[in-house]
Length: 104
Image (cartoon, rainbow, N blue to C red; front, side, top):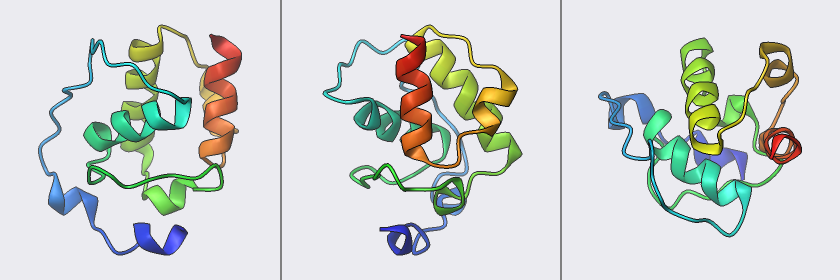
C-alpha cells in the first residue's frame, strides 16, 4: 500500500489548507475513516485514498508542520489532548488509531 502514496505530491495538489473538517458533524464507521477524512484537509491527500494500519508517516509524507497540524486537528475533532511524546511514539496509522481510541 505504501507505494501508492509515493505517486502523489500532496503539497502541490493542495497548496492551500482549508480545514472543512473543523467542527464537522460527520460520523465515521472507524477511526481510520475519520483520519482519512481529516488528512484530506491537513495533508492534502486526495479523496478516496485508503490507509491501512501499517501506513507510516513517511508514506503520508508528514513533516514537522504536518505533524503539528494533524495533532491540533485531531485534538479538536475528537476533543482529546495528545502529548508530544505520545504522538512522537506513533510510527504508523495503527499507532495513531490506538492512541486516539485510548483517549476517547
